[in-house]
Length: 79
Image (cartoon, rainbow, N blue to C red):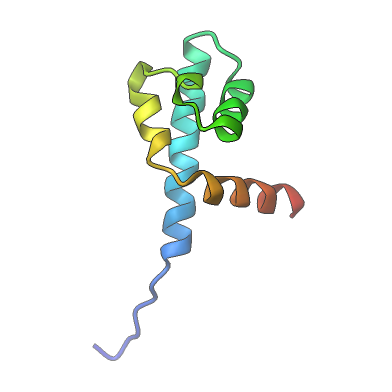
């Protein structure tokens, strides 16, 4: 037990966010929607009906904090 453990909540949170967003994107695409437009609509309005309930996508995206999601998207874009 001489080793110090690292606590990486940010990385875990980002991985969860990416995983969720990828799954929601795939569900929207599979149902024939334009995933980017639908996700943007959800982020801007917080109206969950922009996201299909297919494959539990709506419930998954609602678990994400919209502000954190938007912040991470902007941060990623500006890199």
